[in-house]
Length: 105
Image 1: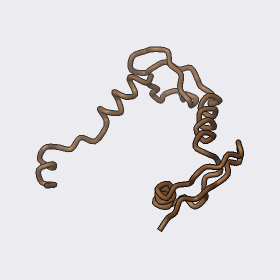
Image 2 (image 1 turned 90 degrees about the vertical axis):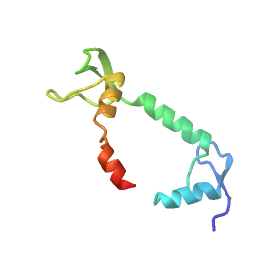
Image 3 (image 1 turned 90 degrees about the horizontal axis):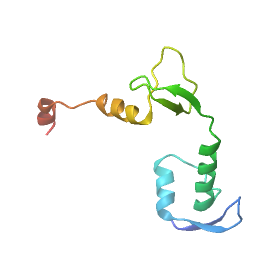
C-alpha cells in the first residue's frame, strides 16, 4: 500500500527517503503531515531543543540531594532526583497480583 517517497529537507536541502515503514507508522499514530526534515536534522533539532530547556534547582524530597528539573517546583509538591524518581515510579507501578494473573490466563 505504501511506497518509499523521496522528500527534500527544509533545513539542509538534502534529499531523504520517507520509507513505506515510516509512512505506515505515521498512519498508525494518526500523523497526517509528512516529515519536513531529514533524520539528521530532526535529531539535531531535538538535541538543540533539549539544551535550550530552562532547568530549575530543587532539592529531592526523598534523599535531599540537589537536583535540577525541567519545571518550576511548586511548594508542597514532591520533587525527586533522577534516581529517586526511577525508584518511586517503579514502586508505584500497578502490581498485578498472582491471583489475578492466574485468572487472566
